[in-house]
Amino acid sequence: MDRTAISWDTRYAPSAEVLAREIEGEIVIIPLTGGPGQDADDLFTLNTTGRAIWQLLDGQHTLRQVVEVLVDAFDAPKTVIEEDVLGLLGELTTRRLVITVE
Amino acid sequence: MVSTRYFQIAGITIRVTADLPITSATFDEQFLPFQVMQPGEEIVTVHHHFGLPTPMQVPDEHVVYRETPWTIAHTNDGWVYEGRYAGKAGERPFMHAMWTEDHSRGHLYHADNVRFLRGGLRALTLMPTDQVLLGQLLANRQGCLVHAAGMSLWGKGVLFIGHSDAGKSTTVTMLREHGEILCDDRIAVRQMADGYHISGTWCHGTVADISPATAPLRALYFIEQAQTNAAIPLTNRRELLARLLPCLIRPLATADWWTKTLTCVEGMLRDVPAYRLLLDRSGSIAEVLRAL
Image (cartoon, rainbow over all chains, first blue to last red; front, side, top):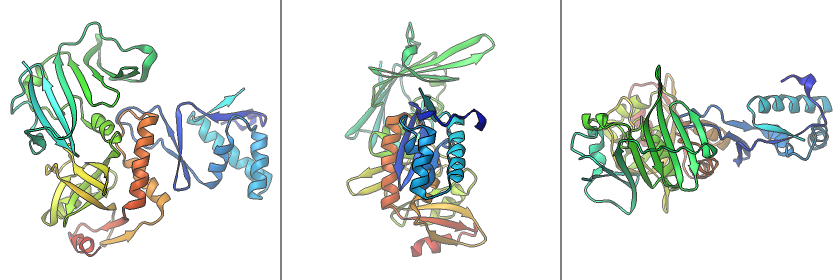
């Protein structure tokens, strides 16, 4: 993902082709594009930080707001949270698990 | 003329009928242990027709999956599967299947009767595998199909789970004398009133021993090659989840299928003890398992 192309005012939301389910405290993200006999290596699980980010990618929060909420929640430096958000967003957009919301 | 055979798997009777006679040679002998004379309470019907319907209709607006050779559509009436070979002369349909919403009844139309008449069929659906059907049927019955070897070991159902070549078949072969091999590659899991049960399937790997038997599921063993034999409890459910999810056999994986299947998986994680099973292939693992 080209990070310079990221606008912190962009809102993201889960793709309609995705099912997210919380199991044992982890969020499992499942692309619904798989067909018969496909392997399960496209399943995506999120740790605590990833889970918090995912829950804020709700089409309501801009990335800037996502970072602000998480800085407060985790009491972590803004630069660290920004890196986490961009890292996960890169994975999610590459796998087409999220879409931008106008 | 319609001829009928019944096959029982994981408590489900698959009633197979066809427009041509079904003989003792029609299906591979692997199905013999699963054949029953009378249907049980849960009946699924598969009917084979020979000759494709005209016109075949796979409504584009309802297509949910398209990758050669399969196109799958989800309509108000159920599911439509169309199989097409891609050749130099273009695509040629070989199968058109119409299933009810819950896959409890299917009309399967085949381009010709050559394979059927030749016999020795290794799938009741005449598809490359019956896993697609079994995956759907089990999901609708609080169950799932897993990539695992299964045994009834001293009366207890156990699953040996691992990637291909992890040693599943070797393990059940080593333990053969201590119980009954259900299948070395695909096992049906169902949640019943008294807990989870496993059943054998005909989708086997290198070990031809298969059984339609059912056993209460008492342990999940994740196989690891090692220099010793040991069973180490796995109590971290997140780790268990990460190990188990890749082992699910997926049919067309819809949101509904995933939701039902994950409910089954969650219950297994909660109710069934799991272990890392370290194996040195000496065969003495039986002593370790018996002690658990």
